[in-house]
Amino acid sequence: MGARRRDLLGGLGVGAGLMLGGSWASSRAGAKSPPRAPAPAKALTLGALFPTTGPLAALGDECLRGVQLAVELCNEGGGLFGRQLTLAVADAPDPDRAVAAARKLIADMQPAMIFGSGDSALSLGASEVSEGSGVPYWELTATMPAVTTRGFHYLLRVCDIETGIADRCFEAAAAVVAPARQRSAAALSVVLLYADDGTGSALVPLATAAAQKRGMKPPLTIAYQPGVASFSAIAARLATMRPDVVIHHGSVDEVVLFFESLSGQRWRPGALIGATAAYGSAETAAMIGPAFDGTLAVGVVPYGVAPQLAPEAAMIALLYEQRFGAQPRSGLSLSHFAGAALGLDVLRQAGTADKDKVMGVARSMALAQGGLANGWGALFGAGGQNLRAFCCLSQWQGGEAVALLPAAGAAGHYRAPAG
Image 1 (tube, rainbow, N blue to C red):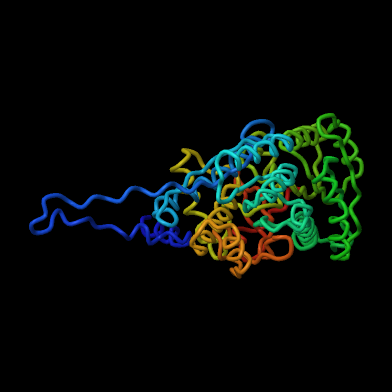
Image 2: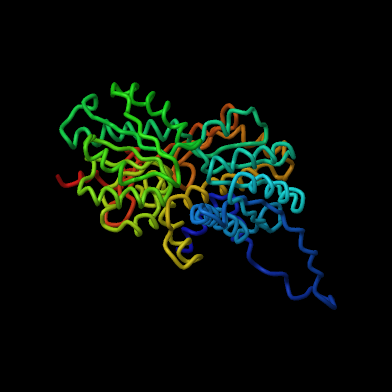
């Protein structure tokens, strides 16, 4: 394991730090005392802005853990510029407090870079504060397209966007579900069920475009108001309609209520595709139980991915378990590790925390897919969007999320639900 750990540190650009062992000679001829060690350099502060309290706390904590692992490994390898790294964590439970937290973080800590935020509503305001202060902001998993359409100079987004989520959902329907049901993609009936909030609503036109791209009928849409929806009525309506595929965009609580209501109807669609982080979470799977098996999820790359695409995923899962005393709860920690490690390597290559040099190095990167720990690459285009990120299709099998698409990352085969 030690050799692989050094390899992983090398991928962070800090592996040489483990190789600088040895010690000072105890004394030189005639020397009366050993040389005085130089004073330690001041730590380099990085920011982490995630929801650590409130309804998104579980999501935010899993994101934060990935960043913490990357920073701790970097420190283990010697840090950056001969300096150890300090991670200043700011809580962003809602959009207003995300803005306030970003302002306080920048004013109090002067971070060289901020990692965030796991949620688009939080990212929009926090990254605007960061842009105004000239602090590089690394968005790691917020997917709303609007995050990178504002012409910001100090913003980079490492993950894919809602457009990729919509396309992967319909690729799953056309290339995975349709053949298993011995149907043509064009013949499938698809319903898009979504919470009528900013991110959910943004998915509707993207889903329509993705369906048309694959020669499929646009999905029938069913919107509901978060917090007040009657999932019993929604499930009854779906049981009457009997669509082949349901794509659901909702929170953890909404997913749990939806499954309870489907159980009450003694019916479920031929394929259920989740399009939010809630569907990629082991905690959601545990709350729902065996009924969650067979569910498809579109989102970040899970730990259950082929090593050909993401050879370090298993190692990171082991380090996660050693550090936090539990198995990873979702691929969010893997993708946040990968994105944070990329940011640290950019700092290393820049050789300085100077914001313009850092952004210059980042924007000149051309890392092929498979170059990051979760299988993503890095090539930043207009608005700071990473053009070599992608969404993954996985299926819950035996309590584990197993990658199915892209094909290079497939760690198993699709299991069609019985009946």
